[in-house]
Image (tube, rainbow, N blue to C red; front, side, top):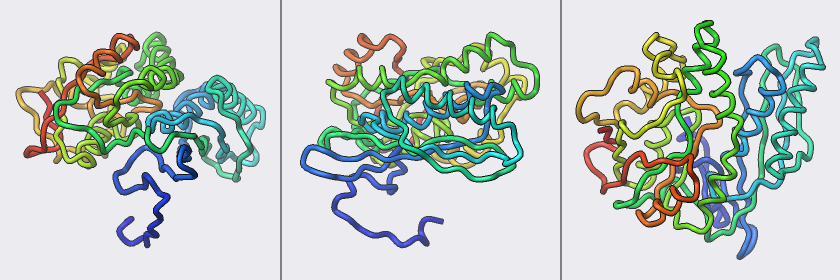
Length: 314
């Protein structure tokens, strides 16, 4: 579709949509660039306050994935005109609370009358032009590190089917509410070659973007991946989101599996995440420092020169 959209070249565009990065970056001066992103979606939990907070965390994540600091946001609201406005207020309150936690100010927003509820933010951040973390900089020899557990999409589907336990849902919600701010701050003084947050396209989808943009192959050790409590069981029971199937159809041809991969494990690799973790490509010594600084991070693989497929799963 984008092939038919005219492109206007501008030397101030440091990161555009050519490599499917998390956000755009526009040069303002020698020491300042703006990071801009937008994200919104339909409710994924029942509680409106929590939904608003998760939406905010998800929108903010793209700025941290670029190495930036969120500074301001505009809300995006689609809500039925005859709906309960107190529910809408709770959604907005939840988003505002999470934005305040991140130190990001809400300047306003826009709303439309829509029978289907949707909520999110357009977020602007600041970054030094020489300290941008693009998804297209991974280098052979790098270590791949990830900062959250996988499985929010599958657990959300299990919740809709009435088979998810309260404890498993609570753990998933806690993960989605956790900002990537601390992880980004732990990376600040280190050499980051490539970074992306894993969200709607799933782990494989976002890894694919990093591999293709960097012209390398990412080798993923499936035994190292960590999953939210209950996620593997629900995947085995067939709690598969529609987005997961789309992700597999889109990115599956870029993957080479070496050995045997359990079906539920394969499903989790394509599971669409909400407010997921950061996938980071660093030199080995910097990876070790990051793992020591941020105890939720863990090693998931390494980077090799471009091979037959962009993704190899062991």
